[in-house]
Length: 70
Image (cartoon, rainbow, N blue to C red; front, side, top):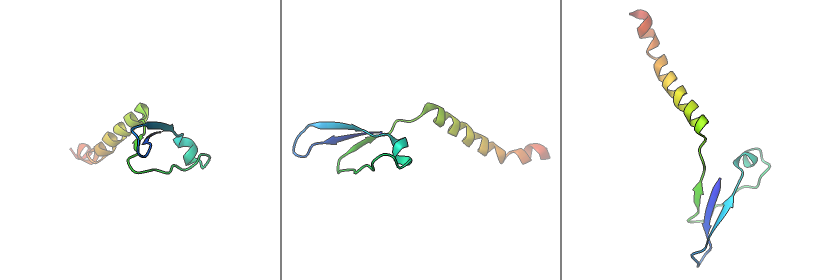
């Protein structure tokens, strides 16, 4: 995860990189957010694809009884 923070009173921006997995395992420090911080959390293409496929599959489960009755 990337946090872009502007130094107060200047136009200088600093980029801070955090390991989300370490934070979730309680091995990394908690992030203290400041006003106007910009947070960028990259997405995982394989995870998003799997979630999309699962959501379609769950939606189709409701139509299975209609196929059996017909």
